[in-house]
Length: 287
Image (cartoon, rainbow, N blue to C red; front, side):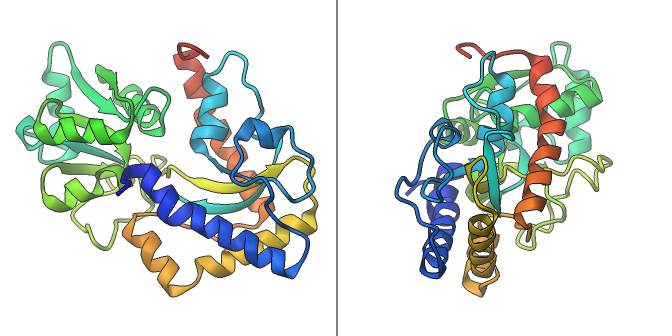
């Protein structure tokens, strides 16, 4: 079984997008002959309603900002059709760290002469960027130890080989549920009903530390508004079905009902928020 973000995409995000495309196809000329495509392929595609991509903060905001020569512009080269939601970022620790709250974590971080190390699912991920943002705000010395994916990072955290992780909620939720790791704070807009003990960073005194590792459905630039609005309407209808909402909630996926224009403005605001931080860290190796 796939867990973490890859599992969420396979179980929730991709089926939702595909179902929306199929519904819109039945109502008109929107279809998906080349599905799913990669971002750079969609950026170069003809905007005829046949090619779409699962967009997201990682591919359309963070990756271009970390690249010296990005192969596409996450805003200019796409038509953002529908917001599909995403899980919040969570700060989790191994019980042996001795931190039972975010306040404890801050105290331990400041008391450690060399600071503390944390893991994420990889360099350039949202969890990494979120932790770096937090470290700068609190003037913490946090050393990033990147892993190649959330699964190996979480395995080492559960085993106690590492003590701190910043990653998508969906990557940590099973171990949080099992009590193997402790969630000290998460970036959702509100506490999750199943985990009322986990505070939001907003409650912890960071009103603007609200963020999701979000995904969307996007097509090439200059896609027909008729196509994008038809697709958007089909996906929003699906998102409001009870069983879909239940599944998304189980994964910690937070959804919003955004029109294509609202989703585009949201993508613009996310780029304005995260791209400067990524660029201040500098281009990643190989980019």
